[in-house]
Image (cartoon, rainbow, N blue to C red; front, side):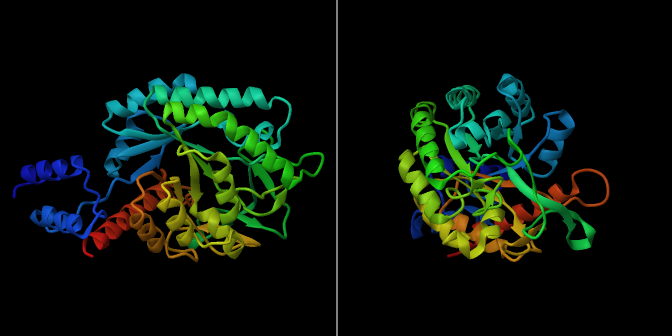
Length: 362
């Protein structure tokens, strides 16, 4: 079989719906398909995506050089069409677009004045995504963002984010980065989630956009007078998604954040992937590792933290995860350019290939 015949045969197999997991006969067919190159396909239908800060030609060229098929980025809806067209012209696809104006919104999370206006903006964002063919949104439901303590150093002196409960943390990444003037109750947060999700559910289903809700970072704590009680545990996610009761509202699993929570999450990250991935409610995965669970952690290289990240990738392959996978929170290395990201993306690609090969061999 020459290379052209191989690609034609492989494309036909995928068009017929082959996943490599459906049955032993399908896996056998997959092994036979790839005998011509002496190796399995690089990946299954997972959307391994590179975070980019712009869509300039040199940025998109780097993505191509790294072997990426998908990219993701943050911008405002008025720029969605321009960005998507530029990405497509470079021969890439857009896996996800983030909009900071409808991400970590205090009015929504706490039911504050202005909530209905922000929910309407959220609905319009879903419609704007669908209009440019993007069908995944990652949404964080934290009232006051991601909390951290001063950066620390990991392998080779690379700079990394950290959280140490013995120090005073600060927040970033929301429209209210700091403490509120009173303590909110868990009941208030659950009622606000129910109100929000019932409003957006019809639009998510109408547009076909899948909303993956990000894990609280860090999870399980009360920060700035807000208890993190919903997206901070297995049972919290289970209850929240049962309230949503929609095929379009699911999990945006941050592996690093789940590892931050440790045993307090109720289920480990592999069990969590098996459960929500088995329900097809796992839409986005942030793929990163940390040094240890709370009360103190720092973010690490993928092969430096306390989790064996190959086990995580193998769990994703086992449930045939076809959502968006994103390397995140990269170590800041010495030298020029996004070296931490480049290192991470290469490592992830190797894990994807190895996990796929393992399943085709069984």
